[in-house]
Length: 147
Image 1 (spheres, rainbow, N blue to C red):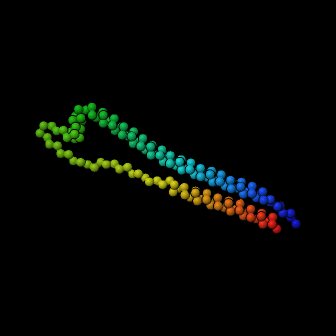
Image 2 (spheres, one colour):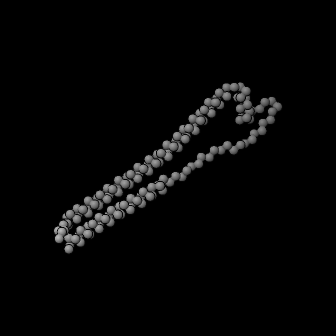
Image 3 (tube, rainbow, N blue to C red):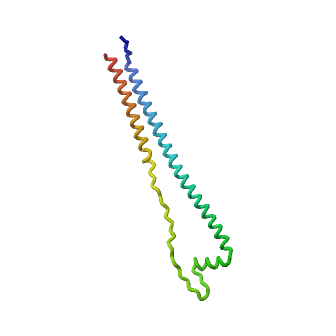
């Protein structure tokens, strides 16, 4: 017959304490990892938004530089003043037609936390399985020691 090893109560207590501490450390590390991943995703989205904004501003800068060079031409300047500021020559009538040139920025309501729900569920399942395994191991070893 194989000799069964007896596990003392002190060993069980140490295993329970260190097992619990290990679970909390793993949980802390996983939550920390998820938090950093969330921050990285958020910063990536912000970087993309700012890059697009920078490109738009560069295009606007080029348009404004072209407009400045055009405004140096007296004929263009006179036409520009008549169109935009309702100036007119003698005997001219100005009729202003309003055009809707409104740009609407589409704000995306990205809920990044929704993407990480699956990670949180997986962490919870792994933690539950680990705790269940530790408890079964302790109960199994206590049952063996009673026999």
